[in-house]
Amino acid sequence: MLALARALVQRPQVLLIDEMSMGLAPLIVESLIGAIRSYASAAGAAVVLVEQHVPVALVASDRVLVMVHGDIVLDGAPEDAGAHPELESLYLGGARPESSPSDTTS
Image 1 (cartoon, helix red, strand yellow):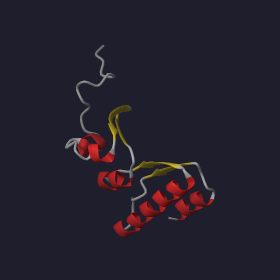
Image 2: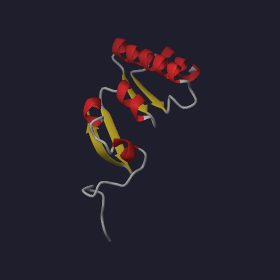
Image 3: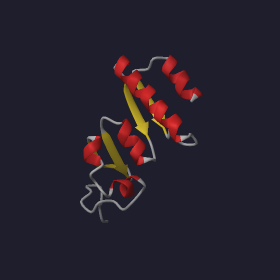
Image 4: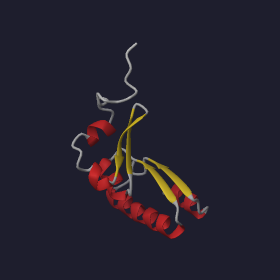
């Protein structure tokens, strides 16, 4: 929480937050997400949130991108992303979709 406060004091235009929920109580995470969304709206800033807990990420997001092995496999609105039952599997390192353009055979 101190690191986040130090970052916000600098009034960044882009804020990268990696695994914000790790080690924090759910009520604290909820409070921090509210503060980050308020800051982003007031400052017109972009926030890139890397989060392992999919529900937290979906609630906090305006746009969702899911990468598997460096390829973007899902890009869209949080409400659309929540409709994909394989989201958690993909996000947590599941199998790459068969139609992925980076799948090559040598």
